[in-house]
Image 1 (cartoon, one colour):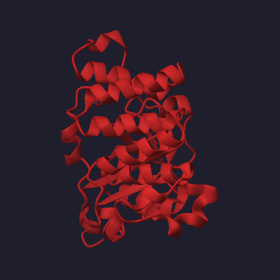
Image 2: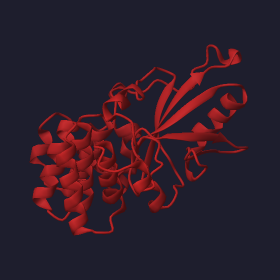
Image 3: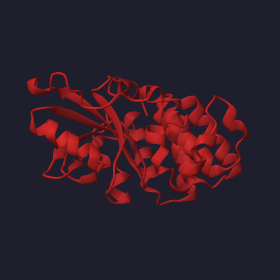
Image 4: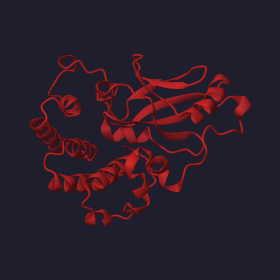
Length: 255
């Protein structure tokens, strides 16, 4: 699980430890470092391995019962497995520890809406996927060689804005003179693509290519998006939008 889209660039100070991270199912059971376990939990979510995501986050919570981030990740994994009641209780635990935790509060409200316990106007959510069947999101993240790519955004918006995002939210891609930015459908800025990819896509977009972008994974400190080429200009018939992904990056059905 060490692929994590370009070798887990977000590991920061732990980047030198990436080759040592467990890669086989169950091997994380011997890990006791909560930082490394957190990275494995995130990697499992990005790979749609929700069973492992649950187990790893549960292990983190055995080591640190007050870990709100692990509680939020666990709740998300439970949601994706269809265990909505358990997820709701897990978010509640996070709120008992941190009553002002935006992620837990927003997602708990979304669960209530999905279960029909609240009307849309009662909490003001306009997050794009409020009424979307969670299982149907898998259709969004289908890998197509040369046409799809998962990217970690740079120059991110504030944590309060990132906290409003959910997996599957459709976002807007805008090509500018020297950069490409990503925004919510209401125009709220979210982040920017890396310069090298921006440079390539600016040429493709101005040349006629079209793309759709969705939120893949979001926290208050990071935002990963999924880009899909939806239309290729005749002038780029034999030119793929993206280089071939590594084998491990293809199993990205749903996070």
